[in-house]
Amino acid sequence: MRIAIISTYTHPTRLARKERGVMQSSVPELIASLCPDHAEVEIYNEKEADIPLDRDWDLVFFSYLHSYYEHTKVLSTLLRRRGVKTVAGGRHALHFADDCENYFDSVVTGEPESNVPALIRDFERGNLQRRYNLPSAGPAEIKPYRYDLVDFRTNKIRLPGIEASRGCPFTCNFCVLTGHESYRYRPVQHVIDEIRFKMQWNKNYFGLFDNSFSFLDNNLGGNPRYLRELCHALIPLQKTWGCALTFNVLKDEETVKLMAQAGCRYVYTGLESLNPDSIKAMNKGQNKISEVDKTIRRCFENGIMLSFGLLVGSDGDTNEYLEKLPEYLSDLHYFNITFLGIVCPYPETPFFRQLANEGRILPNTISRDYDGYTLCHRPLALQPAEVIEHFKRLCRQLGSLTNVARHYRSKLWTSAMPHYKKVILASGPEILSVRNPISNPKRNYIAGFDPIEEWDRKMMEELSLPKTRIRVPLRLSRNTDLKQLSLSYSTP
Ligand code: B12
Ligand code: SF4
Image (cartoon, rainbow, N blue to C red):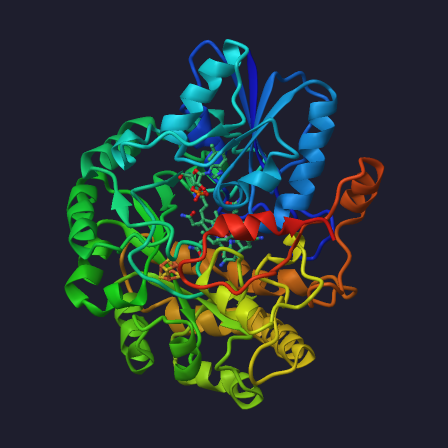
């Protein structure tokens, strides 16, 4: 049996581009670890390389985000025409399983560890089911990812990723996890065993990346006690690693020191905004703006590079705040922004419900637009065109060479911890990448005003595939069953 596992991708510019960055989806390696030994397994990541659609596969698993749905439907339909069976899984498939059933032979709505082996067994018996939703025994079931299948020559700077936890204990109103996933974590020893014995390290550039990896967790600090236990266990391994976690964890100096000692050199945190009104609108109370400066300094002084993501277009944003944002940032001497996006009402979030109830979702929004770089709603205090002007200007200002020079100048000598300088230097391209989403001058960044990728458009026409628009015919409340939403997820 020949199995392919494909993580699909479409670039924010809507041009046929790849982005061979450090962070990649690790779902293919994860699903591969659940396939039986007798299967021939191939994994593909479309963010790094094109998918060879003419290969002979019996069963293909797809992993994708909302904005890749139209594209993934095309790939699945082309394969099904050749008799290949296809499977959809992940957060979009979970919430919109009814719609997915139209384009895939089977849909997994539960955790992969319990469902993928059952699905493959049924497939081999010629008894593939339309849905799989077997309960999971929790993250202790996670198997070591099949990093031996990753081709590190395709993306020379990719870091192997590892999961210690899933979910997040916070409830930010725009986050896809809110209301759907509790925080759960693997036994520390499983994580350590996987790091120590199983990972194939990236051997490019004469070992520059040897012994480095990245935690894939949404929030590695969701349980600070667990994080500290993990750090103690990591110290003897002498690896260098990065992770994402929430700002509140970094306020505790002891924890920051312990993380640094355990090899942490990079932390990404969603700062989202320096505007208290926006932070309030996002229900992101764990970000205390007044403590930002001290916390940033603490991280850099201990040898951890702290990088931030910012969002524009939230309900607290005004022209004045967005105009002054670069000034506010330079008051924070050590700031480092590596991601700038437009706040996105992913359909399964409280933010979407609120906007839908208030009639503020832009009328022609389709799945492709839910990418974090397209305005899909009307903000309270700004016109859509104003948001886009600010977004483009901030991308240019923050993703500039001047900003990289400032970053190097202010931080290169802040700490003498091993590998610290290497990480600071390597983050230059990440800062410049803030500009990448705006490198197509034809893009409007407002939902309904940008066509989808040309190849997808042509193929959808040829295969008679509809774009998917989410209709919102009823008032949604906190308790509204999402199945009602999926019923209205339909052809324009
Ligand atoms: C690597 C990464 C990326 C990569 C690759 C994207 C990808 N295809 O996953 C890149 C850089 C492209 C990316 C971009 C963005 N990302 Co991102 N990213 C991640 C990150 C850190 C890790 C993804 C990963 O490999 N996780 C490990 C795997 C094992 O977990 P998983 O992907 O959640 O999948 C689980 C299930 O969904 C399921 N599953 C998934 N696919 C399949 C398929 C099958 C067949 C089955 C059975 C099961 C299954 O199995 C997994 C275990 O339960 C996650 C955080 C996270 N922990 O997930 C955010 C995350 C996915 N990103 C997010 C966001 C917001 C973004 C951005 C908007 C910008 C940003 N803030 O980084 C953009 C644009 C996204 C878009 N176009 O919609 C959000 C959600 C986005 C969404 N649409 O749902 C997440 C959840 C982070 C967060 N908490 O906000 N991201
Ligand atoms: S802290 Fe991050 S992962 Fe957790 S709910 Fe908020 S945005 Fe989502």
